[in-house]
Length: 246
Image (cartoon, rainbow, N blue to C red; front, side, top):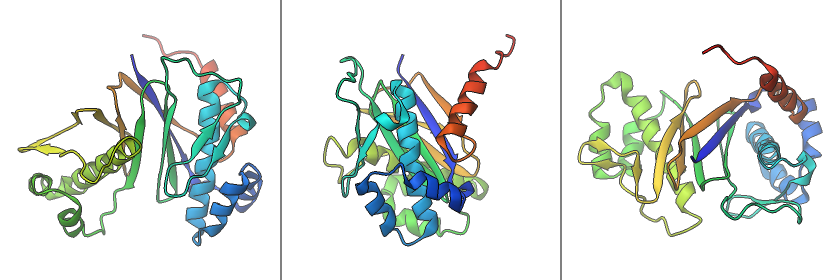
């Protein structure tokens, strides 16, 4: 039974003091990239994204936060480095994917399957028809013209998010100049050869997780606060809470 976890955190809540404290967690390569961002919101998305990645990897692998190292790779996703004596069982494969939008940061993790994650804010002011005519295939454009106007924004961003997540899933293993069609005839596709897409819940956003293998479940965890100690306390309290009666 393959599974994944979708972790989310609000970087808009990050104060200057919190940011200054978290910067100490970054490696030299991460710090160099952090300093190149001109916009504060983008700096904070990057900073909290790298801290969130360390936190989720340490929780998933059962390691201490400071045992996880991140190596920046220009033009590619960052690479996680585990301690030399940490061995992932051969039947498992640790995978992660990061995404951000409008200050929100998400990280998908799994020990069962490679992943691609995308988060897109539902921007009602965007000219989605013009963007869709450039980004989507003829079949996808035709499908997008069918929903009522009230549902068109969600349909557009759901399609866009699936495409972005699918690109992240497939780009490490093959040329993705052409992504698979997400509409077959008039039917919206949620899976194909080597990929399976599922939506996650985040208010006012479209969130897509694409996996190489089907997922039986995706656990969603929204982390309160902006620092690993607060997140650890939140998870500990959740673990101690009594289960709801059946």
